[in-house]
Length: 76
Image 1: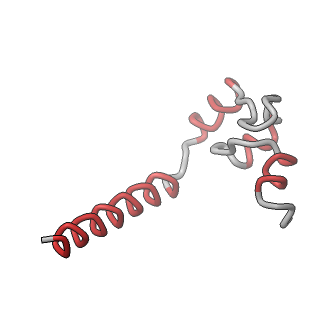
Image 2 (image 1 turned 180 degrees about the vertical axis):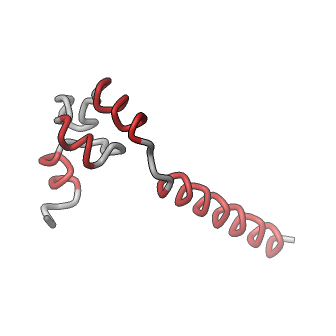
């Protein structure tokens, strides 16, 4: 019984991963990007507004460049 539950849990995790990947890979329309840039977004770490240029380049960005670099451990 536990093997069956493990297989079901593993399959559910695979399906969720595919759904997330599909959602993230969907391209945004120009109108959607414009709306994001117009509305603006604050960095989840420092709370400052993410610059419009970054949002235009990466509309799904959750962090400003500095905080993203810090988050990634300065890899960039």
